Length: 143
Image (cartoon, rainbow, N blue to C red):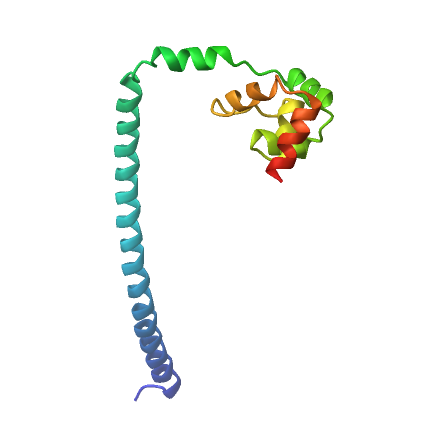
């Protein structure tokens, strides 16, 4: 006759293996799902990289003559912007209102931390010919 302790130990081991097997099976299925998803994402990344490489090989359409003239006419200088703002006697926030941007953008442009976009250069160039009174009048009309 088997020992009672041996029988209990064997039964507990059997039940523990059964429970662990059930838990591990769900984890195994989830792991397989994750691996398939990762493989699919890797394929997508590789495909996108191929597309980017192909797109970079193609040449962009040449710019029209008027676009080249517009960008060539308007240059930007941080020092020039700062002297213009000082000459007009405006704060960065007020000058930003005239230019259609924030005062923080004006500050960053003056410090050389960033540069205005090409679309903003004509607006800045339009402010060059203003005097103090005209700048104040425009600012009052905007407010």
